[in-house]
Image (cartoon, rainbow, N blue to C red; front, side, top):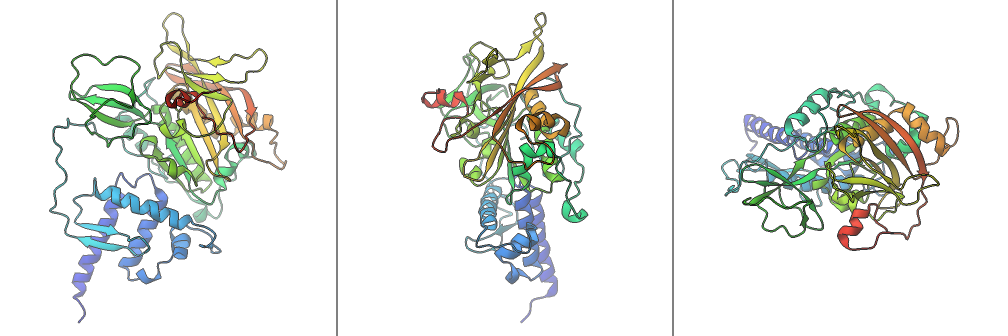
Length: 475
């Protein structure tokens, strides 16, 4: 006997509400491709077309792949489904623990299942954890533009109010190529850097660095650096300081400390917006993640863009890539993470160290340096881009320079990628000098561009601090 249509409508509404809760969650807010897949799967199942869900239909309907998509030659859907299942598990173990209906996608299947009865279940007890600041929201895809210009001064950490401001100002809908009939043509001067990222068949992964702090019960934050220690869950009580480093002694009388890694620099946030806008204009799918939740395995099959220096980025710090210009901890005491850039092979008359520049009277920052690096990816056929400054201001300046065609003409000209020529992608590093006025990057100038040659069997750290932390020699 058929069920009451009103019961079917009520059940469908509950399933769609469960879908909306997931789509609006922080867990999925940074993964647009996963959100597309989930929306397609649930809506197809609710509308009675669950039997039509196949790997091919997911690729063409959800990910908008061309009709000649071949699942046997391209594992894009399978990779994204694995990520989706992980995200569902993460969501329901945290912010969605009390959702009355859960969406489940069993391994080996694409059609979703729906489980109910969780509304009355309690979440884990908080114990003696102190009240935590609200976690910084993730930057959603397609709400990012380059219009954020009112930046707060020269600070390392970014509290939620600034991130919320960034998102609200950047919230402008992006018009896609598939809705307009063609994507924006990439300027030739940008092709030498962005060509591999805008032509890839898989989403580009944008990873922005975030600093690690330990928080006291009074809410005070103490700066630490993780070595090989496995990150703890956000807000977890730190049982031991083993595997953590601090540049100075901990004040006496500080009680229990709690793990907190949800802060990032203002420059990294604006850089993520700038890069995301360029990829959106080129109709290139991408995901945005912070370093604290990114694993080495996630970057193996992707083109990756790192925003920020390796001192804040545990994944970037350990990549087996050789580079000429590297970030190091400064030998002298300095704030902003005590970074400097070392040129391992300086030319005649060129310095080997580049540091923050200060006003001799006030010690205010008046200049710094940044790097634009195009490096080989973890697996063949992929690329890594690093946009990073000595400070967060330099990171923002590097992203702005890399996304502006007039600025990139300098690099394109040095590399020989002139309009009309057959362009080939070359690995390189560009050193920028950034003028700083009133705590903001006023002007960036490219000092030189260094072409890089990589040997397949070379496996040296891209940053010298990785060698220091792991105990391996750094040339």
